[in-house]
Length: 102
Image 1 (spheres, rainbow, N blue to C red):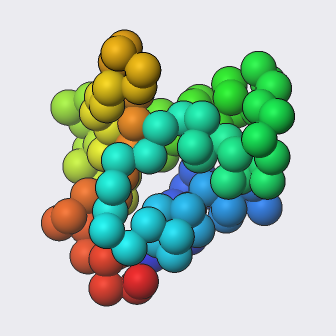
Image 2 (cartoon, rainbow, N blue to C red; image 1 turned 90 degrees about the horizontal axis):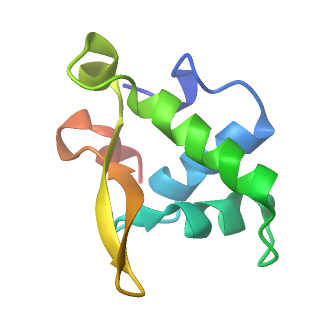
Image 3 (cartoon, one colour; image 1 turned 120 degrees about the vertical axis):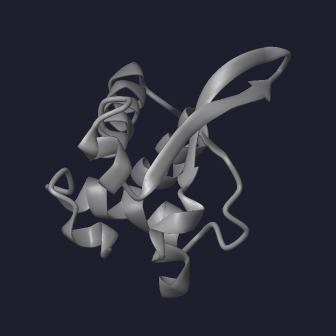
């Protein structure tokens, strides 16, 4: 699957989000929302609307749990510990075959 042709990739910000996972994360580490926002918007001064956009877009790429959308997605979601509290994070699915694009 080519992640750039995923139906939720609609603009240059979305392409940067995909680039983060495909080109900038060769070890396929979990990426927090704040790290994704910093990459997508090229800033360390994260605004609430930026965080909301990236979070919403990543969840739309993952798709609804237990659906065909989730099965066909190239991303998976989970939780990581950030300063002692759980935070949503994302990474590429290992079985997606996208890792070969890196």
